[in-house]
Length: 129
Image 1: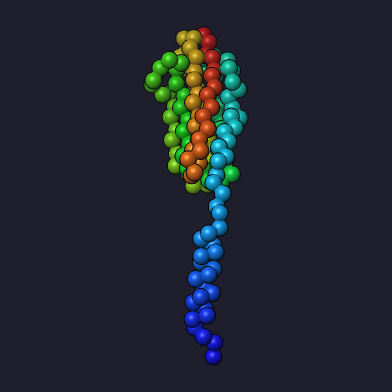
Image 2: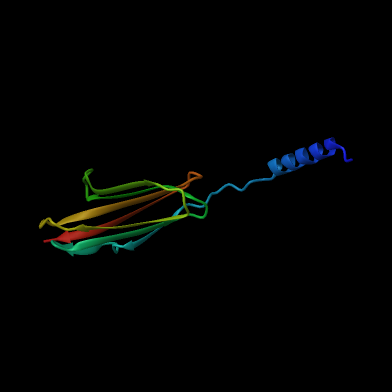
């Protein structure tokens, strides 16, 4: 019969070796791909602004944020905040221009991965009478 202490020593050795393995830190920022709208696109009343944004990360996304507001305004026309537990996520939404005034729109897009890396992108659109 084999000695049970040999099994215990072998198990403890495996645990110690695996605990001592160097783990690589994730330093890669998440990626944000703005599919639509094009940067500095022009719109008029009645137009639909199609919004498509793809978020990806090499390990795992944690949260994403999308905000659309009139330039120099703190009031968000659209605000999307999501907690994610996957390598990718996509926003597909739209906005119909209903104001006949000339104004600019600011888009602020942010992604965080589970390691705390972050990426921020901004984009602009113009709405004309």
